[in-house]
Image (cartoon, rainbow over all chains, first blue to last red; front, side, top):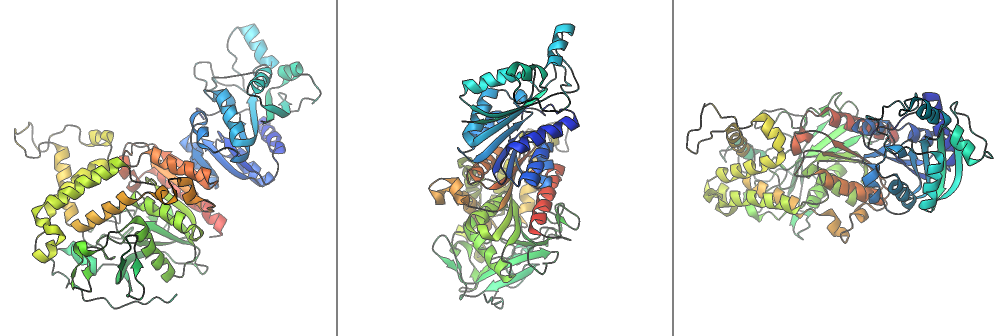
Length: 210
Length: 400
């Protein structure tokens, strides 16, 4: 990835990973794009018995993954996904990384070409806290979840849940499932309307297919 | 498979060549395995070597399952003395930072084998070896060798040890080419593969540099059509120039600048002559001169040729991915940012092909300004990568 992704607080991260793991059918082939130090891949190998691969931009992250016994290549999601053949994986995962890519649309399209399914998780910029911070302070929000100032953030393409749903429409991706997690890492009811997800979801996880 | 260890063929007596280095060709300071005409080494050229000698070193202990063997493949001017003092120069082994007790390639854990490649001059059959048919050095009578021929000879050695599957095959540069060849030709015999600073082919630019080196050797009047042993001459000047040109390609512009800049050698101002005014000139001359004391000029021709001929995809209709079809080998590909001889793009082509073949592959591009030679140097990230990769592979293979 272009830069280390914004990692939410630890307990929330676990929930986020568990939500992803739940979407993955056991024994499948999985590519984790922007896999960091390999936490998610390790979880998926342990709990879902997947055959996992990763792409990570930082040398440190790749080394940590290789030492863990993961198959990870150093690369950039924006430029290197084109190297993978069609249908190479059952799932291509982009966890907390979408907002740090230069071309999110291109990345999502490539994911759906390489994988039968794509799983994307990202921080929701439409969350009420973020909206409140912008409204009341008039400045770009800095929170525990999004700790960077605007000028040094790796996150150059924030979006809201509704923005992401619109992108899925544009690239003709079918949303198979969506999960929104609130600030406490709890799931927001499936029956809640989009506006409710967009307001109260702090993070979202989407399972997409072509 | 019965392996016969033939007695040494009548060889030129030690010291008779007036060159310590070239004595190594027949009398290497390491273990030796010999094969007779009943077990010839068949070559890509269609010819064969009837009396094959393989010189090798081992470190560590082969376990009872014979599952912990790592084959190290050396580069163009390397040898089997990975972690042993060089018999001619007296210098520590070329990978002694990497291989040893507690080192990334840990000899407390793994059984490490390294053999001199066919065509070289440190004890495995090469142009400086005595041809038993004539009692003279082969010279250019030795058939042209390919990377695959080198690997075929290594297979004979591995068979000799009764090793079914190598735990790992590792090597840099020409060694990395052998690693890729091993993984492609004998996938079931390679559990993990570590090609470093290498590529699946030699580029046009690389061939060009090698041709300059070969022409320098052959232009030396002392080369005598490769029969310099018989004629009592030695094409040292040509070989030194070849080494000087090649050495530049092993370093980066930044590293040269950092080390030498435009500094003058033991003088305050230029001499307005063609002496080695600059430190870089003096350094290259030294590199050239020391090289000829330990290397055979004809070997240089053979080995550079072998690298030039290497094009793994060519055997698979140009589709590199097919070279690794169905492989279960675990790969770790390593490149260096400032390597312009085997730039990262060459390693990435291998990674792409492995991905297309659904292989298990890791890839690390290590940031360094030391150029191609970085694989031989103290590079902590390289050590960490290799240690981590081997440890996890060892875990998967059940090596304690």
